[in-house]
Length: 63
Length: 197
Image 1: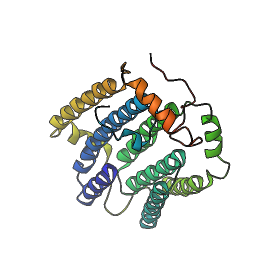
Image 2: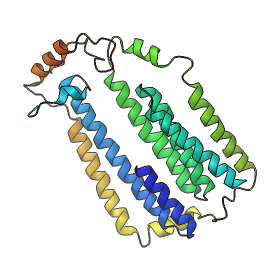
Image 3: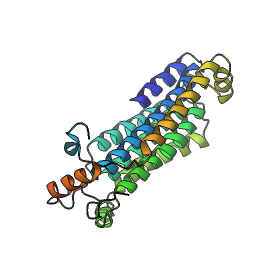
């Protein structure tokens, strides 16, 4: 989704000959990198805590 | 001719994305996701944004995908993980991504040999991007740096292995409840003893 938004920004920037689209794409890239890092940290924490990646095993709260 | 290249690259990106979504194994999906990102990079290149295309290849297809592959490899430290990987990487599975990536490679080589002017929209050189980035968008750069710092601290905090009293109970739950589904992706590493350091 972030990649599609970046593609739309770059296409718009290419349409009007502006560099702003590519600048915004760089910001989107930074956001995606941070999001992937945090998401994979969450996945690792879930695995360490439950020894499993099954979503059904995560069905209890206060885990 | 660049228009045809644009459509071919877009079709490769869409097809590989659909194939990625319909795969059942993680490694197959990652292969198709890499091809999809490469296709989007070729689209950027055709559109006259070579700097963004290079960044797409380096950061998305390079760094982020390597992060995914590392996570997948770290999470499957079981005895039968080797068997699963041998089952995943059968000699026929790389044909689909290889064909799509070959189409993209042929396209890039063709465009690089000819006049890589892109579409009629014209090219935005990287110099303009850099000037705009550190000119009117300087506050955005600062915000992005703060976001990356927050992401770094958050990932470190989440990746920190805490000692939990309740971990043993959950280990027992998952061991006993799901011991019959051997060979599943879920249970990779369940044959190890519970790590309660």
